[in-house]
Length: 423
Image (cartoon, rainbow, N blue to C red):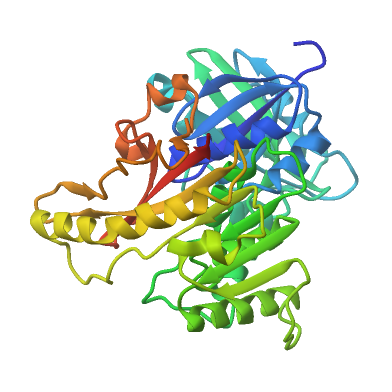
């Protein structure tokens, strides 16, 4: 492509979820957008989007860990090529190196040489009379924390990114952006009202769901979470600047927690605030009749995490998992039907469904809604077919159910993200 740029996006720990978010947000950028190389760690995209615009897009991400601009393709990593990427001024230079393999057959070809390369660059700089600090970690890649705290995104620093794409061929670039880990942690752990027993969706996952719902959708946005709980998804909607935000829950205590957390977030923790922003609307009501509660409202998108079942202290048996899945299924079917009545054609619902890893080693999922088409909905394709063919369940994609999977090793209940479109 003429006047094009290449960027490397580093994926989160569940690559399918990060790829789905990237896929939907790419619908917002306009112009051409081509996937050139990808692995389960990173993806390289060629686009006409200039760096300042790609940075604006990056700030919306929940599942992208790092963004780098690719400057050139090389057959051999030379010291001078790397030094050319560093800032040149009269001050001490800070630099680090991260290596990403986009081809598993060359994983060991270069990663073991990263530290030797860094030492050689530092030596060359010293010969040139330039003071420098080579930032390292135990891994082949530098984390967002390391990059941020060691001045690598400042005017005095750079993180050199090397991507191996095939034997004897590399992409060379520099990092533009890393995930703002502190702000995510602040919005999660800093809020005054939490209910860990009821389960709280991670803010990053909440943001990803919102980006999938609204990716490529023209503004203004109007959004609903009918199981608002402690307000995590509503809070992320606020942080994304969504125009009109509606939240409800049948538990009045949950609505109050949401109210307190939204007020805290709006005041940025600087003091008490009793009133909500004028574009945030909270109500108490059953999600199975949410179309009645909001009958005069037309929302463009819905993202929600309903009741995931009772808290568990140990894995269920396979039979126990089946019983529980059938027990919660009606809540999901009925609330989904009610939500569908609020959406315009093309409107999307991203909904978390529970699944359980049982003592037999098998997963148990909530049965698919047999009436989904009659409810005016259809499952939405979440990834391009070229990705689907290479992703496995452990990567966060369930091919048979066309859904995304999010799990943690210490949890007995996991999250399946299903997305539907109004037809």
